[in-house]
Length: 253
Image (cartoon, rainbow, N blue to C red; front, side, top):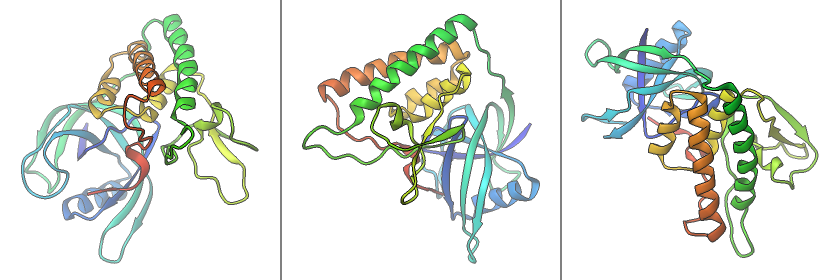
């Protein structure tokens, strides 16, 4: 498939929503094309280089399809978008001359579960470990921290209180005088693996490795190890306490 590319200093996982502010002319044209054709673009992680301006960049060969869910256009041509990751692709070749933006020939990547029983076992383990991880993200006495703000596109439910670790899976800012919303843990191991990959606060190369995992089983195995690593560090406060992730505000490009 032919796919417009949007290199960014972030990793978009399927099921995760990402706000974008578009001001550079080439990306305005990319957005206009995608809106008019009702087609997605591809988000890829920049390995070296800048999102905006001239100069060469290098980026990962595996990325995520981004479908535009909301689009607002300013009088001067800038856009505010909300996009959602819907699937993975692998780049075969890139054309830098056909359009103002990069254009890739890409293949969609299927989601291979791996061993079904093992994937389900790992999914259950990852969920339990993730609850512990979220508990430890809460500030202790004398500490302050911002809310985790990651938007997802999975089922949610309203709850009256938000005091338990499970409640910390909330991803929407609650409206004034309204109940909090929380993510309903998906039954599907693949959906769960992408959800946790997009929420856990890790370095971009590690998140990219999760995205590129060949099977859900492999992704969940990596996730369990990463969650346990982060939990170990958080218990000992061995790293800076910064519970904010990439999707906390609009990306600019």
